[in-house]
Image 1: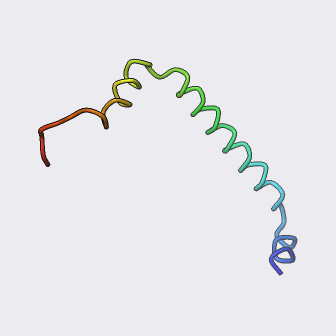
Image 2: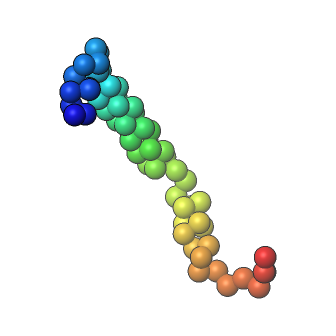
Length: 57
């Protein structure tokens, strides 16, 4: 039934292409961000859960 509904919409074939382009762009952006992030800040954030803190919320 859904297939029949989608086939009746004119120009529906462009939506998967647009979705793929958006996904690919966001994936490349996240990859570039992950490779350019400061390694010292990542190490500091990774050690945060292991720190012994006397502060309470």
